[in-house]
Amino acid sequence: MNAEVRVQVDLGERSYDIVIGPGLLDRIGLMLASQGWEADSPGLVVTDRNVAKFGYADRVASSLRAAGFQTSIALVEPGESAKCLEVAKTLYDAAFDASLDRKSMIFAVGGGVVGDLAGFVAATYMRGIAWIQVPTTILAHDSSVGGKVGINHPRGKNMIGAFHQPSAVLFDTSVLRTLPDREVRSGLAEVVKHAAIWDEDFFSWLEVHVPQILALQDSALSGILAKGCQIKAAVVSRDERESGMRAILNFGHTLGHALETLSGYRGITHGEAVAIGMVFAAALSEELGMCAAGVKERLEHLLLAFGLPVRIPKELAEPEILQCMLHDKKAVGGHLTFVLIEKIGRVRIVKNVDAAAVLRVLERLREA
Ligand code: NAD
Ligand code: GLY
Image 1 (spheres, rainbow, N blue to C red):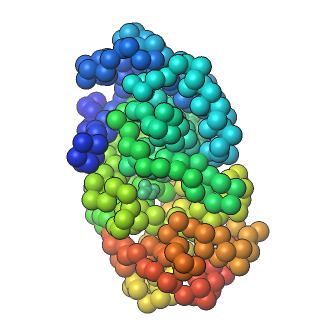
Image 2 (cartoon, rainbow, N blue to C red):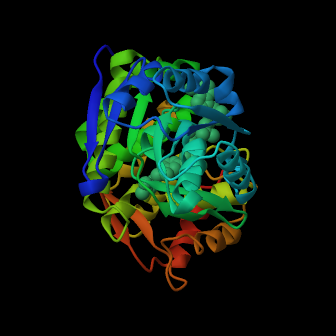
């Protein structure tokens, strides 16, 4: 991709742009200076040790320093287990060490883990300071948009958190070249989710462009990121704090979060868990007579083409999974809520889903 793509997240005074394009890391300082960000207050770049190895955080910090902004870097360990209170505390310490003040800005340079964690720290340090997302994974086209920030509790994924919109999302597509293959595939699960919940044409386009996408061809990659961000921005702009329809973005997540929690936040990626969760949600929709035959097969076929898992790991027992899903944020008063699918491109939030039907489908979708 040669030109930048801009997508606006329309949220009144909290509106911001998502900028997608190559080479943004080295231009962040100038971009902020041109928008009038003042150099009086220090900034903090947060990244994980994997991402740091590729020099991405250093490049952001250098760009900021070159534009006159005092900037430090704080490192966390890579992986989902860093999304916890203990690691958040190390970042509060880093914020004190760097003398961040109310006008300071935090830069989250990394995947969804760094974004959710650094965003949570930005939301809570001094009751909230500004922050910018600099996503470095495909999956983060989803996590960087919409302002959901948070950490995990050992008993539940993303259970501690806030809504805190970033001031901008600057997505440098050139960093995706160093993503491990498994993380590429994991990120594609959220792309499939955006298509499945909102846009059948996009879903059909994905079905015929699998090789180009897996080869990370520039135009295919920028196309799916822009489209995914547009869909996410459209949903978030309509319902910022999930009082209703934003919950459709959780398609596949009720089971997905349970699988991640029960795996101790190791061994399964977020995208893999969501892939299994979407197939489960489609199978449950069929079981409840909500969608035509063939929807689950189409979804499953595309996820398999992207090399994603579609069956529940055999070591997890159904009653345990059900119990965990009852603690999902969408569950109210001990009743299960799911995002179910009617057709590709249209989903519905369904409350009080029958636990016996859920158990039947869980059993059917277990790994052999
Ligand atoms: P991640 O942040 O753990 O990144 C995956 C792995 O890739 C890590 O090991 C990381 O170090 C490495 N990595 C990142 N960028 C790299 C690069 N350019 N080159 C090489 N290696 C790189 O995981 P993720 O899949 O990006 O994000 C998953 C998280 O996002 C989950 O915690 C999930 O709950 C969260 N999420 C949040 C939202 C939201 O709205 N806030 C939405 C979806 C997902
Ligand atoms: N990933 C769910 C949301 O952003 O609302």
